[in-house]
Image (cartoon, rainbow, N blue to C red; front, side, top):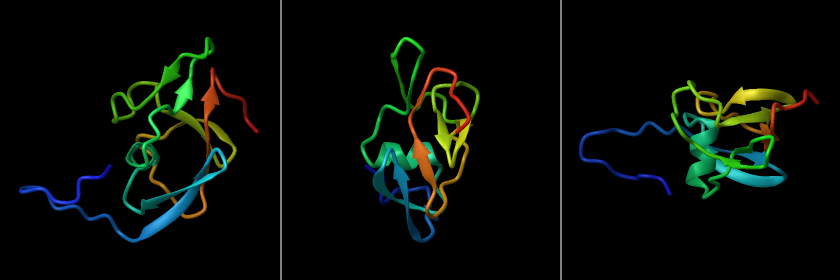
Length: 100
């Protein structure tokens, strides 16, 4: 769910783009981060701990490790501060992550 209108804030979303998350196509806007785009698409679990505990969007400023995912083959990317790009491939990360 995205906020479409706000009485104070002006949203500059940019053009719509698509990327994949675990093989599924997700539509986003070019000025959104990966974590925000996934949250807006209804995807709340971004990664899992080594004990398989779910991790989701927590701080949204890059201080925690809850949103780390594999982006275009690179593990441990903090998706709350990484802008989404057209054709980007994002995958769920379990534990510390392994470079692909």
